[in-house]
Image (cartoon, rainbow, N blue to C red; front, side, top):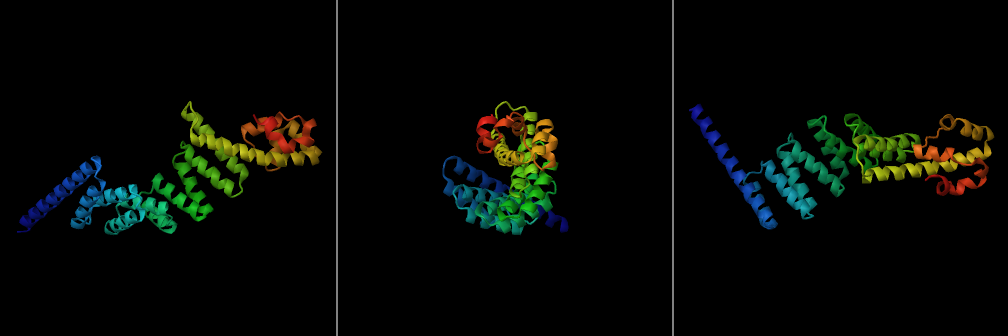
Length: 274
């Protein structure tokens, strides 16, 4: 008798799996033919029959999200997560949509849970870092971003985010190094064309160079020993005062004609940066 019950349970499970697969294929065919609402109805019917179907929940949420019905999608995913708390896929989708609709505390919670399920996940860290950043928790966002950089030091996007966070915290020198690393990593990848993030990193470096250069030139105008050290050993002179310029900024500094110093702070970039 126990063996017969086990076989019956196996047949019932196989039958449910076949019905689920068939309904999902039918829904995809409807989507492909442009009948998205009918596909959504088909999937919602499947969910009423099989509320535990993670695949149906994810597809319903995706269709709702594409139709700009993000909060409805969130409710579907919340039900999926409640029914399968250790399933990574619905947790990931829920964290993403909570971030999208501005439910930042929920995004943080679900990103943490996703990280518990997938301890080495870069995506979980990415979501958590973004949620912390938007919530204003800069220290926590930076800590998570540092983990991302350690796990994948070849992704320029992580170095760029690190630079942004450091800049927001007033860590100008560290931000310059992080943005500089974006350029280095991009060059190491061997891409011929400059992508968007590389261009943004160059713009950030130029801004930080400009910000520091005005201070450096004003200080040099008042402090003769500092000015002499700038001419003789610029890196050491800058480091002693807590400044960190990019390679382009340093090149601009060494090209400055010190006899022009009184007029330089107002327009150094125009004359010297390029």
